[in-house]
Length: 129
Ligand code: MN
Image (tube, rainbow, N blue to C red; front, side, top):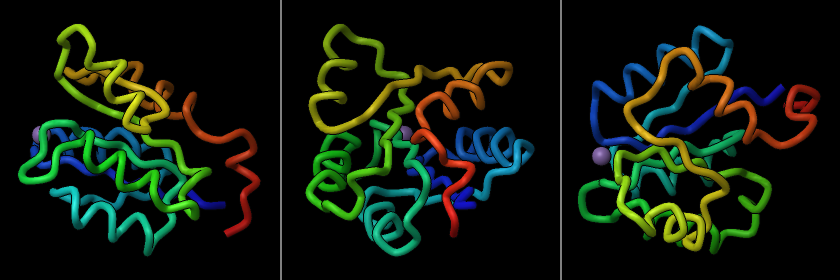
C-alpha cells in the first residue's frame, strides 16, 4: 500500500502537527519546506496525495499547484490546499489552480485526518506499492 503523503509547508509547527496526526494514523510523511523542493519530491516519491500550503516563500501555493498539474504522471494525485487564507475567492482560486480540495487552518486535530482521507483516491488502501 502506498501510504506516503507529501506535505509542502514552510511553517515548522504546522508541519509538525500535521506529521504527528497523520503518522499516528499510519501514514508516512515526507515534508518539503518550499515549492520547488516539493515539486521535485512529488515527482520522485509519487505520494498518495499532496498537502499544500498557500503562503510559501518564493513560489506560492497557486504556482506550485499549477506546476504540479503540468505533470501528467501526477494526474491521479490529489492536491489538498491547507491554508489560513480565508478571503473571499481564495477557495475558488486554489481550486482553479489545480487543487482537489481545501482545508482551512487552524488545523482541527479531531477532524484533520478524516478530512484528508476523504480526499484520497478510491481504493487507495489496495494500491500495491
Ligand atoms: Mn506558509
